[in-house]
Image (cartoon, rainbow, N blue to C red; front, side):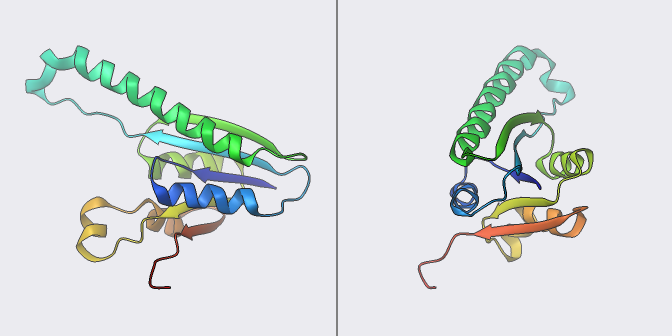
Length: 147
């Protein structure tokens, strides 16, 4: 079985990784941990800041590599393989492309649980994944204090 998990630096991502780490998996399961850095778009008036933007993107890439590596470490156990990846792309696009290219059986993401205007303004990786994934999807939500 191949499992792709999208991670970022949010608590909901940590909950999703912990959920997978605590579950029992068949021997031979492969986890692909993916953290995506959203590209930085430079406007015409910002050409002079290209060095600063380049440094910022480089820092973001290193940061997201560490996020993926940290999650991969949590998933390592006997009988499974784990690979950490970082890509520069919109997270929604990156997850769809990886799921298709790797022929994954399960795509896992955490959910912030945003609704209404927050979801509309901030977008939702989880919603996009659920509606566009070429495989089964598991959306892990943190239990609220009200539950």
